[in-house]
Image (cartoon, rainbow, N blue to C red):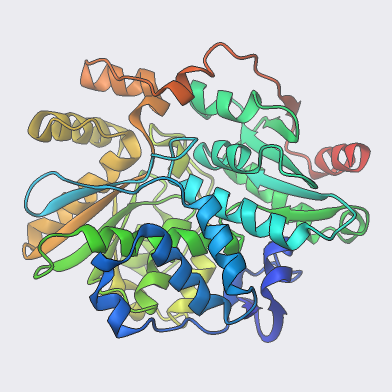
Length: 433
């Protein structure tokens, strides 16, 4: 398997280099040279394949011999250990529950797969690998859980102080061992900017082996494509056009869906559902991509003002606006609308949906007002208990906290406070690694 940078299609690297490096020197993002079309026999008979089988077949096709089949099977077996059930709300709306992993968020799929893949590639290295992660909420907890006590790898998580939920913060700051949390006095975009600058700093990279576990790393996107096939497998009525409504922040999840479609999955449309951080819906409407500082919202994991994966989507669409908007429809919603969506889902379907899933629900509802003959799947990206106070306040009901999250409540938070100056971050990395 060969991969190129979105900023330079003429220079290729191996899968190992792309995964371990995370980000090319030219500040682009890695993309596979070939996105294979999966066999028709597989696509037509998905019901005969387990979730792990689906992951193996996708990786086998993508990796093109970069990893032996027996090792791919072991990586999949160790990472895809929980389900992604499709819950039907009514005849035209379903929810794909992606929160059954250890951190109760969809990012568990990518984090656990990446941990196994990186560990596989890193096994013969003598120098430890330092993984930098910027999080707006869920990524940090998933990466912390996925990489916890992984030999030869240390995790540094940057999160915006006061802008993640209480239980999200506990997932980042209570594990210890090889996990360190940096509490940044800024926004998620500031955290992401620090990580990108670290990768582009030649002096730092000479001293430290750096990598990333954000969706800028291709190893995060690959397993996220698995559950689009798993969702399609569970649809009872496949006679309708299939659309996915995706709560979106950094747009890794939607990009993974586009990869799934390029591999042959029969998807009619993707819906980019955002909160007021709506740079992609605005681009779809106006044809101009204008990043801006992120705004804090109820759906905090989507508070991204300059989504990294936009460059991957541009690459897939040949930098053509018309192609972009032919496959993706965008909608954005305020916090007030999000709360009303949460109440509506609970009242109409007796289903407690988190703020991010509620944005996905509202976007699908808007889309289906005009496009009635479609089967819509909402990606429910996190368990509602991760936003306990907000969800209970909005729904006026008690939300049960799964034991793996409840046990964190009384654990001691340990974080290192830091400003947004890159030199402060660089000096800290140099001093500690």
